[in-house]
Length: 430
Image (cartoon, rainbow, N blue to C red; front, side, top):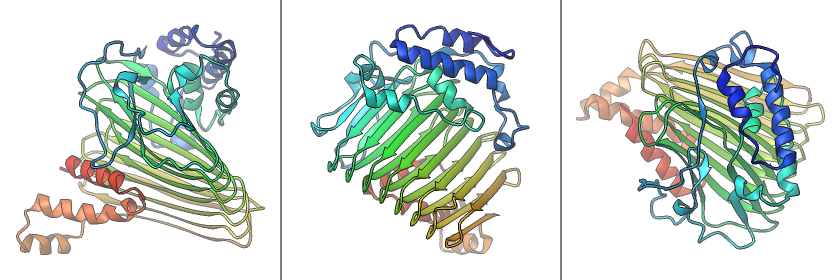
């Protein structure tokens, strides 16, 4: 494979290990690998990477992650008091022995990508061939080039999946590896599904997760998609989520970001037909020195009568840094659009930093759009009041943060998932 610039050896070594995939996929992976090498790892000279430095990826050495052949005893997360459909991926590879599909409706297809690649599948090939903007989302090309496994979910027309689908990504047993799983989620007309994607690590490890999730919502489909990122504090977590919504479809999305030394979440939602609704929300809590989280969210209103809401909040402590860039793009034909976005941040330390940039780009006249952002500290008067009522400082701060996060978590439609996110946030608070 030719390269246009000097790149780390681990990349070319990993690219050369894709021989087991079908011919069409190997050709696509070679194409995407060469495109990534030509483009190169983004630098801080680029606008979308201005505040996030990923140049260290060129200096480190990573091996490809390998499937866990003999699963050992693992303490897996569960949704309290709720039976779920669980898929477990260890180091990016699905482990059937740890998964539980008993509650999956027979008409729903839920499988590992590796398994789906064993037989011809036009829908899978169609979604794999979707190409993201290389300059804006270079790690999506890297994901395709190195992708070996992940999740394929297809919910047919008029099907409501009543049990939540819990995708557990566990990183364990190894250091210095790169994992590039891919989720492909297709919701048919008038279908409904609830999904929780959870990333965690057993111990302090140095690894690189590069995720892509491709979501397609047909007319009147309803997708509730939630994510918990609770990786090792030595890890790098880069994720790209691409959503396409047809007429009157509904997306309810919420992320909770707590872990990783460096985490980057790119979310790109396209409302391509009239009447689509999108709610994209997130909460991040950084409590360790030099932790870094970057949320880049873009919602494109392409058709009329669309509705979108974006609420991101965060707490940043010690010498950590958070970045937020939220953009609403209203195209000329997207009349009667209603869109609101806001980003609020609490600095818990004088050394913490936040860079926030909400944006509106509007090319239609008949719209209602607004945005806003704030960066501040805890209200000392309220903190003093709580302490005067017998709470110690730690408990008072935790109570205030719980109240502060409520605006984000109240958007979560599933009670057990809301409970899990609140519980994990409480556990991680200092």
